[in-house]
Length: 286
Image 1 (cartoon, rainbow, N blue to C red):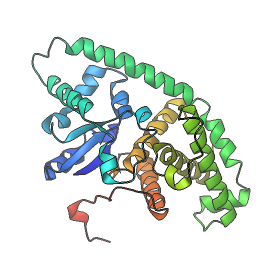
Image 2: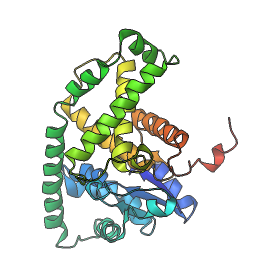
Image 3: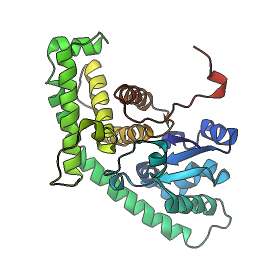
């Protein structure tokens, strides 16, 4: 089974329908935050439009387990990655996609979607509070690098070993903070890096670091709107969980770039990453 993580921007895209129609072994998986983002406003209308393609391929569209439930998982193989799929939730998602196409709609649909919208709005507001001071954290991270190091990053020059060590230190600190903030198991011996690399916390922190370095390369300017930072946080989660599968597809260049770099680095470090999927028409092209 070839599984691609699609973000909200591509749920309605012809590319998703083409991918699913190409082969019955192809499947699409959505993270819980993709569904939350879809239902945060006008949930009934937005979900109907966003799940139109999913309704055509009920056996090829899956929901992933909530991010909060996979923090302890160590994913070291394709079999482990498959365990990230929530099959019960996938059935409910498929039923929702079908119900949204029915005329007249089932009586339970309106109240159910209103409840979903309330939940999604609450979760987005919680995330908004969490990333409110994210820009300050990015500025602090940028301050770890000298002007010369920031210039090297910006111009994509080969960086020094000292710069690399700073980046790795930031990554490990971010991983630790993420695990603590999300109430990872306490009191156990420290995880070895090779073990941490199999866990979502490390991969999400890696994506945040890549995002931070790109931000430094662009001049490290302030002023990004809070809503955009919320979207960034969701996008980086999509990129991170996509490393366990055959790719993370998005209409956002940032997500594509972060996904590519994260997958490349994790492979170089010996961590499990799903095989990269490429459109058959592009295979063999340079």
